[in-house]
Image (cartoon, rainbow, N blue to C red; front, side):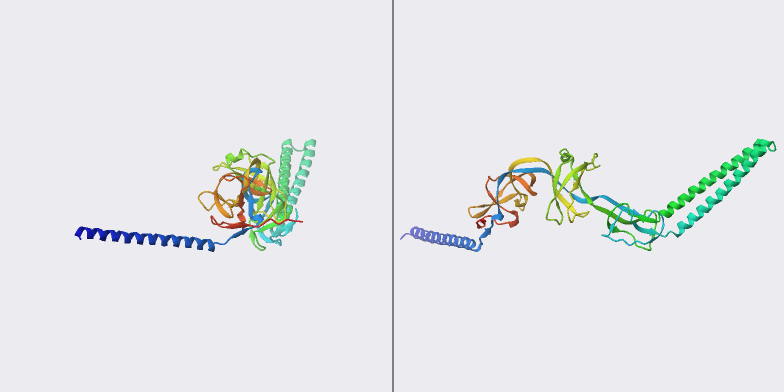
Length: 378
């Protein structure tokens, strides 16, 4: 056999061997992938969803509006301050105590001011005595002038002395009134009825004028100060209603716009609206509130805002179809309220599609599911 034929046969045998090995490896890899997929399918549990875990997408009449938030604030509140300097006494109220309008909250040591009142009263009495002396002298001089015993110049001098004495008496009276007013200011009274929210001083402290003693708030009237952008403020009107969710409260409360600040805030150009909050148990000044201020209505496909997932670059909803979960990217529209629930208009899903509720949490795309039948009442 020729030499080149030997090399050709050898090459052919090597090619056949390599082809057989490649086919065997490919078959083995395909088998491993199939086994892995089947194992994954068997290991992934089936999630059972109840009737409340699935929401059907419907065209709804949604109240649209502006998102608002802020802290609740008492319409009427006051800080009781010291009006005179001295030692603080008889301060017994503490945070949470109820006070009435005009109730004595505390006192400043009145000893010094009582002495000043007595001093001013004595000065006034002395001035009154000088007035009496000057008046008698004037009356005597007038009689002497009428009889021609003294000149009219002497009478004018006595008249000036009388006027000066009367002016001194009036000044002493005014000083007495000022001293009495300072004595009255040693008694600190509640300017309004409400609850003590802060006690800012302690008995025995020496306080100065304008020192803060206690803060009182009236919780019977609360309001929300909502800051809106210049664009949003164009849709703002008196009387518009809002539904607020209060921090820590499970029940929403209603509010309405009662005042709108006529001036924008310098710098941010924001406009502040004041919403009167309906009374409800448990409301306190400072609690955070958020909600939607209604400005109109819109007929659109909408789902609860909590059902929209945002853990991907694009918002999406979890559709329940063909016994599994499918992630569907959606386009969000206007936000609003339906039955005190935050809703959002969406595009990208068809009407009557079933969306997994936000309370279920995030499920992997392709997760097998079963839908529990709805309970029927008799």
